[in-house]
Amino acid sequence: GVDLLDCTKERSNAFGVMYFEPGAAENASEDCLFLNVQTPCIVTGKGLPVMVWIHGGGFNMGSGSSIAYCPEYLVQEGVVVVTFNYRLGPLGFMYFPAAGIHGNMGLKDQRCVLRWVQENIRNFGGE
Image (tube, rainbow, N blue to C red):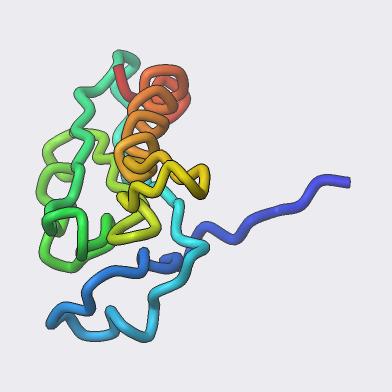
């Protein structure tokens, strides 16, 4: 069978430094690799511009779902906005080759999202 995923609710944030944003600590999980695609309601018949937002935070904190990034204005102006989470802190950037941990998994998460956007954004009205 096919499993359906309810995408109407925001998903978990990555573990990292818990910063001063309401609910950040309560919503942290290792199961955090999600992306958000927000599209305008209008259908133009041509591909819309796309902005991929990679959140800051020094690779230790932050979330693609942060209320600080508020993509609504861009979406109202006809832009497809993609935000996402990536692994943070030790889960994303620990380097310990003796244990087979080669680091930079957070950057690899980012690269994976950019490839996904290139291959799939047309399905969401983007160009």
